[in-house]
Amino acid sequence: SGKGKNLDTKILNDLKELVNGNAALNRRGKWVDLSFIFGIDNDDYVINIVRGRIVEVRRRKLLTESGEFSIRATKNTWQEHWQYMPKRDYHDIWSMLSKKLITLDGNLVPLIQNLQFFKDLIASLREEQA
Image (cartoon, rainbow, N blue to C red; front, side, top):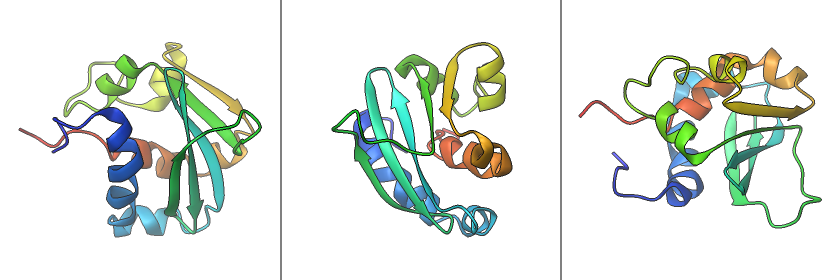
């Protein structure tokens, strides 16, 4: 479990490993070829996906770097989402959106077409049971 790691390390290092090590998730995302922006407070990360596998996660350096869409929330919101048993409204990105805990921008068609893939990708940083 990544309790001792900071969020930056978890995003930059663990996310790729967790997603690419999940065969069911890779199958679900086999038609997903895109980059998207994942935001935590003022930090944006570019996540590049090819055939359902993460090929790169990096900090966004230039504002001109963009993805197909962006999904952003505060650090506290993501940390709550990644609890083993998140509180109500934090368990699912769609619930978080309706409560205005996250913001979505850009072309949302690929997100909606592959919603379960992206939900599971983001939730893959969830803590394991203690």
